[in-house]
Length: 430
Image (cartoon, rainbow, N blue to C red):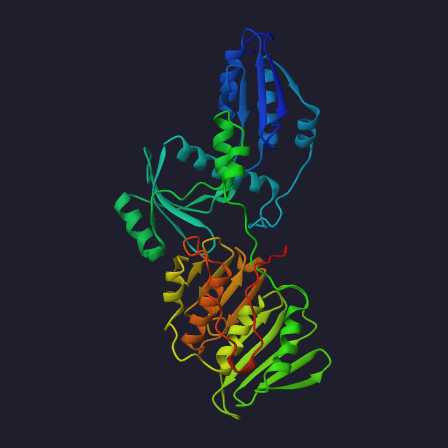
């Protein structure tokens, strides 16, 4: 039986400033009753006649269709704008969804759970005590005001945030969180994501453009331009007689150092940013065992390759003992995980990762916010000198300077004619 006579009208349309958020405009004598039903579906009032649905999972059209159907059953008159109806009728999928095994229904369930957590935090039902960066995403520990096993660990952000573990007491939850994430732990909740800031403003009846104008724009990692590696390699042989050139195949050039203990192989066919363009190795003698090796992908900025070869040609007399010291001074953000430790540049364009139990990829330096989709990567095996790691860390810090250190340290002068490589603040889409 309808809860209200058909003398209230609700019109649904896409939000003009942030889609797919939805605006519901109500008119008629029973508009207050319509507001109550819309509130149950996640809409929030922004003025006496207008409500907004803005979700963390971008599923506003789906839930608007459910709300409109219920309102019609209750006797209200509803109207859906054609552009919104088209969104409702379109089944879209997340690009690069991190759980590809999920069906469309399961993706909605994950998003709905993340939305509930978002609402609980925003409305004060869930208090966040600590947060951290685990190297891939944001993690946190918090407590619900009521409920059984109400002390929880959270993993992920935006539409992927989930409860990963629950505990009986706050002390137990906090102690385990500190054990897992160590030096990466920070007090209170993590800063709002860009999407969370937009949603907060929409629900307050404010345009999202203010947030977009004042927030820090996304920064792309520095990436080598096409042909830069080839030019650097040519300059290496032209300017430095310590390196001897071999070209056993058309697609491969080998640079052998005069000491016969260092060898760099360059693949001219490497084009994609994930292709290994360089393989660099050091040996304990002209016919000795290999001490360590590194692979360098095609998009890696030339200053980093310059740093590696310069170190191998003429190691500096003084250098930092470990990359930790350099990155700490450059205000990079540390994150601890049971299997690895990461340091991330302040603008999140470059990450240095240590995997202490690995052999092949003991250290990884990469551009971008995700190693699986990195713009470039340098992978170094166990045995690499810590002094070289510190030099690489310093160059990476210069490529992505801290906001508190606006002028990057200039690269050291090239040793014995090694071609100079000046850090170029360039970026290229991945």
